[in-house]
Length: 220
Image (cartoon, rainbow, N blue to C red; front, side, top):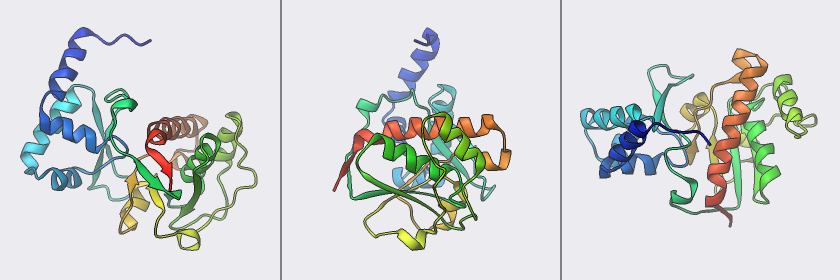
């Protein structure tokens, strides 16, 4: 068990004592949002939201990631320890979960196969501009964790999407291309970096995010 310094624990409790900051945490429980999206949902002016995000950041509860698509944009992510899974509200009843990235060659494929290994809720993955095939790095990291992607093929979102899908974008470019997505996970592209460590980091983050989402999803 990781020991958290008393001062940091006190700072986290103080940060979450404010209703607006607690609402930010609630909104980020299952997916990432841009500061603009947070401001719109909370009805807060940008300067006041910036103050709340600064407090949550200083308390180690959130982090911000610059978009890999539109570099002017960033996404706010709730860190895994910020809110225990059992305290995250909401139930989603869906017939299928579809993971979307641009190329459908790594992140969305890993998410699809991880999801399928952990639940009977139907799943699929697709890309907005699919590559010719699944990345060798994704196949290798999946195999190291007991998942077989050797027969996986890339698909376009237009080929398989249904209106009642829960769409989870795992790529900033896909999120910014689509007119809407139900949830967004801002996960760095391991193909761009190309190292085994990058693929492992993507796999681990997707795995943790699926673990956080699963308790809230029921088959429709």
